[in-house]
Structures are given as C-alpha cells and as structure tokens.
Image 1 (cartoon, rainbow, N blue to C red):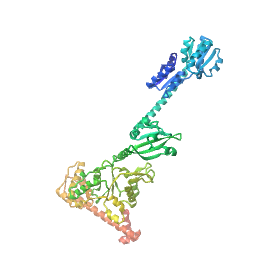
Image 2: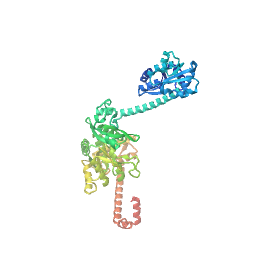
Image 3: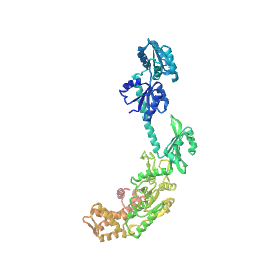
Image 4: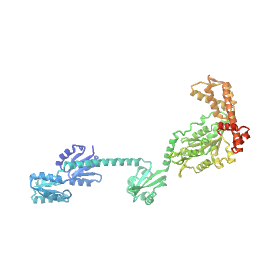
Length: 620
C-alpha cells in the first residue's frame, strides 16, 4: 500500500475518484471529510502511517495547516472544471451563481463573456461569509449555485439548487501522480534519515552537532553516556550552557577543523575533534565528535591485533626447550625471571644456540603474550630496506615504494615484542634512528612528518662480541646500553654435551614421525654424536639428523653412518674455512696493490690468469 489517502469534501466526488484511480492508482485510499472533519480524518490516518494526503479546496488548505509533517497535494480547479459544471447546471436555470473562495475563481469572470448563460461570481474570503453570500445570491434571483462542497450545506438549507464543481479526471490523475512522487521522495528521505540515525546511535564516538549560534541539534547516545546529560535536555540548548569545555567559536571564525584536543569530562579523558559543517560553501555549524581515550586505545589495540593474527605469533614456550644440563636450566630460569619484567633484553650466543626460541618463550611468558611477536633478522636486509621495514613508509616515499604506504614492524609490534636478531650487523645510521625510537617511544615513517606512539618491548640478539664492537667504535655505546638492560647468555652445545643426546633423539622422533618411519640411535651412535664439536650448535645437529634420515636404508642408526655424516660435515667446514682464508688473502693483496691485479698476483705468488680465475670463482 502506498500510504496515500485522498480525502474528498463531498460524497458525490467519491465515485469519480474511484474510476480515475482504477488504472494505476488503486492503492490510494479514498475517504470523505469536509473541512474540519477532513482534518480529523487526516489525523486518524496519520496515526496509521499515512503521510501524504490528496484533497481540494478549503479542505485541502485546512489539512495542510493541520500538521507541518503532513504533505498535502491539492486537486486544482481549472477553468474547464468550472465551466463544465456551469454547462451541466444550465439545465436547471439561466442565472448561475458561482460561490467559491477567492483564489479558486480569480479571473474566471473574464471567461463568462463567451457563454450565453448569465453567470455571477461571489468570491469568499472566509467560512463566516458563506451564509450571507448564499443569501445574497438568493436575493439576486440566482436559479442555481455552483461551488465547492463547503457551500452545499448552506445552499440546501435555503432550498437553492446546488451543483458541486467536479474536478476533471486529468486533474485527479495529476494530483495522484504528484502524491506518489512526494511519497517516494519521503521514503528515500526516511531511509536516509534512518541510516543517519543508526550511524549516530551505534557510533563509537560521542557526536554533537551545533548550529552557527551554538544551539545543539544532534546529541547521540554515546554523548549522553559520557556527558551524563539526556539528549532531550541537551537538544535546543546552547552548548556553552551545558558543556563550556566544547569551545566551538574558533572553528566558526577560522572555518578550519580542530583535531585531537584532549578534554576531561566527568573525570574521563576524551579526545575531541571539531569540524565545520558547510552548506553551499558557507559554514552553518560545527560537528563535534569525541571518544574516551581508553576506549580509543582499546580499539587501536584490537586493530593492531589483526596483524598479530596474520602470522606474527610466538609458537615456542619454555617447556619446548630441550636439555637437562645445568647451563640450559640456568638460562631457562633466568629467562623466566626476565619475562616477568618489561625491560629490554640482549641475548648473546653463537649461531644456532636457540636465541629466537628463547625470545619467543620470553614473549609467551610475559604479560604481552596476547600481543604480536615480530621477528627481524637485521643482517638479512640492506640498510635502506631494513629502515623501511622497521619504521614503515608513506606512499611514494622512494622508488618502488607502494603507493599505499606500509606500516613498519614497530607499529605492527605495538603492544607486543619486537625481536631484532643479528643486531650487531646494523649500520651506524640505522642504529641512530633505532636509538631515537627507543628513547622517544614513537616512530616516524620514512617520508612522513607525523609520529606514531608505540608500546613495544625490545629483545635483541647477536653472535658477535657487542661490547668489543662498542670499544672499537663499531657499535653505538648509547644504543648498546639501551639494549643491554637485561643480558641472557646462551652456551654453545660443545659446553653441554649431555644435551646433545636429548636433542638428537628429539629431532629424530620429530622428522621420523613426519616420514612415517620408526627409527632409533644405537648407544654407540649417540656417544659418537657427543664427541663432535658442533660449531653450528643445535642447528647443525638438526641438519645432521635430517641428512642421516635421508640416506638411511634400515631402521637403526649405527656409529658408521653417524661418523660418515660428521666427517662430511667436518670436510665442508674445513673447505669453507680454507675458502674464507683464501678470499681474505686475495682481498688483502688487492688492498696492498690498490686494486692492481698484476701486483696482487705477485704478492700471492700466482699468475695473473690464476688470480683472475679465482676472483671469478669466488665472485669477488
């Protein structure tokens, strides 16, 4: 149903309206109501949800004045309508009196000259004149009165023939279509209004709108909760009367937004934004939105945790660390104590001793375990890329940068832990920028001038003698003391032989299960593993176990196969050491000869061609 009602002032018009609405507008409800009765009928229908009314004459005017929220479409009187009614009335007499309100018959007397009927026009200014005007028409020997429905009752009382001016079907259809257009427009506005209301009611922000004079026009539920003022008491009042802290005149005068202002409301700290409201480039008010700072921080943390859920997770815990030696148990005990603090930790240990395993375990044992764990190997990236990874960048900050920009790992790790492995490989320039972030607890993306506050715990690790690098001026002392608040030293595998057997059996079970094989070390094979020096520590041991599994044909791992793989491992290490030594000799010779190959070859005691081949092979 269209929720449109046609209220006609006279029953004689109902049949005509039904016939006209039959084609395309039969969803319009037709009622009868003259003047005040028509207004009452409209009020009753409005309670049922009707918002658009079709009527005519004085009844239409009264309905229109009855409620500003009602939309009224008036069926117009046309010249043709009046003269067709006069023509029908001509059957009852030659003297016709037209009585209607002045706007309805203005200018019609000009057209009366073209008809052979005597027509007199009696314009009305208000309802009180109807009685006297009808009597005047009777005194003028009028044979029949033509007019609106409001005249009918008085004419009948004086026994004067009367004919209601009928509207043409075209006028009725035109009014119906106009009513449909208005109803559609109102429905669209209502949809927009409801959408706007839902946005306001369910926004996380308190939202207040004021006009240019400071009168409050909007006051949403969050604003009610934070200010403890009901919207009914706030709307219509001047904002300075009830919330003097929300100064808005500056925004009106400068016509510029005022963002991120901190205010105290009812002992709650809120962050407030004030934005000018423009209509046709003219500022007509101010929209104020504000939010509890704690709520804002919770939302920010939730947003950042989305990154946490996308892969920045610490999977290892202290119970996952394998080993029973006194050294490893002491390291675990100390790390558990460190996990209870929020201080920076420096983990020292050779390659492969499990520095990241300890870093993850510390994170999971801390009160930051619900936040992200972000790891970065500082030796794996060139300086410029390392800087953009750590601090992020804005769109177009450098060639090849994403146009959308990218958050740095400090931002990603907010509320959690950032693990910086191989920190000793970081260049002095990046060291300085890292120090500034640690001191100020805020980060600035590459190419930006805005800073972002961060809350990150730093765990760094290195296999280099960092204190020695500080003494040699190769690592910044101020950064070193920022990182080395708590120090955890991990011992190499050669110093805790009793852990070799436990680790070997753990790796065997792990990889054999994946391969769906049931294997075991012989006692002598395990003993042979303990005799190895393990320069690559736990990582090297895991690699050896995997190589044994890849080549083993039977189900038992004996001493022979262990020795074979350990010798291969040793040969590889010796070759690597020799290659490194040879490369170092060539570099030294080139340095002494200032890059001249002929002189470098003489220093090395080899031919120039041999030197060229070795350089090519070593890719120097």
